[in-house]
Length: 187
Image: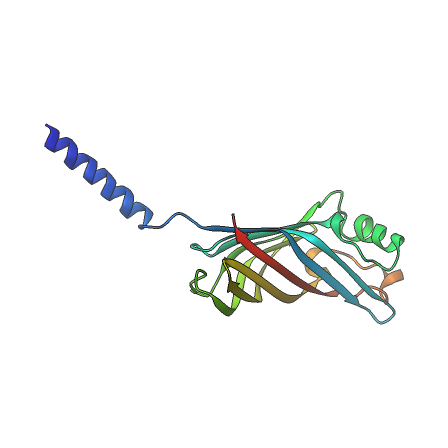
């Protein structure tokens, strides 16, 4: 009887291990003060703003990630009125509080080994409530148990249903240049 219970327990354990694929639990890295900045280079005006309140999480075993930023945290506009128009007329931050990017690192690299790597992050970029699947190239450096990320990419306002009124068409570009820098540490 005891022998049968041991066999059943071993069979259950074997089934569990096979069903989970012998995966290790995830090792999570996070940031709460990453920086994201953007530039709109229109014919009549250059608009810049940034926020150092980007939060993110990276599972280094599964290579899954999720980053988000509160829209109202952006600062540095040319005037208070420009910031107000950004929040109320374009990004509608009372309705769409956050922008996010979640997905998976495409490259099969060991994120526990120190070094610098060029990677592609594939996921859903959500801005103004509109999701777009994107592949964003990034540079990462792993050193001293930290992961530093740097990325430059563009966002088209039209891809996220953000209209540009004719009145400001020469002052607001459809193509916005974005830059992200963040250092992630073990959680």
